[in-house]
Image (cartoon, rainbow, N blue to C red; front, side, top):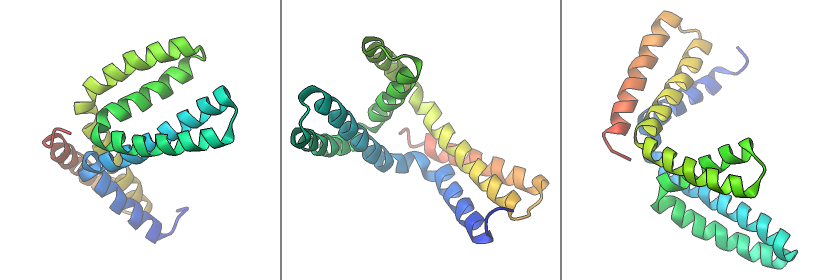
Length: 163
C-alpha cells in the first residue's frame, strides 16, 4: 500500500461522486477548462501575431471570461471542441488540417457525447472506488460487485438527466 488509509478513503469518496454525479458536475469543470483553453489560445496566438505582452494579457483575460461563460452555457460543445483540438494537434502539426480535423471531430464527439460522457464518468468513478477498496484490503471478490453496481447506478443516474 503506497498511500495512507485516509488517501484511499478520499479516493473512494471522490470516485463515488464522479460515478454518480460526474456529468452533472462537469458543467462547472467544463466552464473552468474552456475558460483556461480560450485564455491559452488567445495568449498564444496574440503574442505571436502582435508580439505585445500587454495586448496578449488583455486578450487572455478576455478569453478567460468569455470561455468561462461559453463553457458553462454550452458545455458539451466546449468539451467536444477541446477534445477534438487535442486529438487533431496530436495527429498533425499543419494548422489547416488541425482546423479541419477539429471541426469534424468536434461534431462526432458532440453527437456521441450523450452516451459516452455518462459512461465515462461512471466507469472512471467505479474504477477509482475499486482501486481504493482493494488498496484498503477489501477482497477483490467483494470489491468487483460493489464497483459494478456503483457503475450501473452511476450511469443510470447520469444518463437519465440527458446532459
